Amino acid sequence: MQVREAMTSDVKLVDSHQSIQDAARMMAECNVGSLPVGDNGRLVGMITDRDIAIRAVAAGKSATTEVGQVMSKEVKYCFDDEDVSHVAQNMGDIQLHRLVVLDRDKRLVGIVALADIANCEGAGTAGEMVCGISTPQQSGSHQASSHH
Image (tube, rainbow, N blue to C red; front, side, top):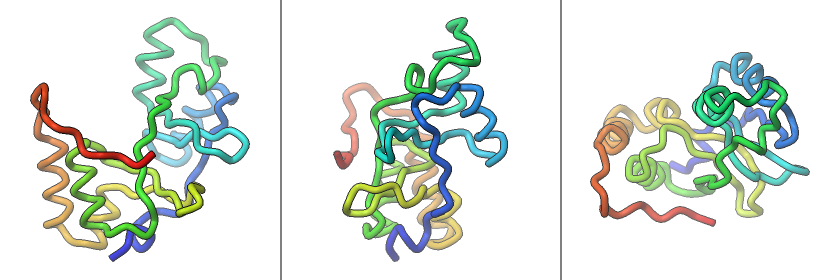
């Protein structure tokens, strides 16, 4: 099964110049903890509720702080035509619950989550991912390769 068959394609994108308050409001409306960040239709980062809490609120920044100032610039992603079980293994290796999905033209087409994979592939594949995500990494252990 390919990622495009399991992913959620209704993805909200926040602009890097929008405020963190806008991003938090979007997260609340969509009931998600992270959003992809774009500039002129190009994926430039991810912002999480944790980014807002740690990099903004804890640092004393205002609610009008731009998303681009607190987002994570390194974005892990997969392609929509990749095999779900391969992507699930990589997600476990790099300890991610969600992964941005791009098409081969590198346009954002969706997000695939642990729950999506469990619904499509069954509990076995999802369980393997959770084991990988829940296992603390030891220093010096290898990281899964990511596409760039």
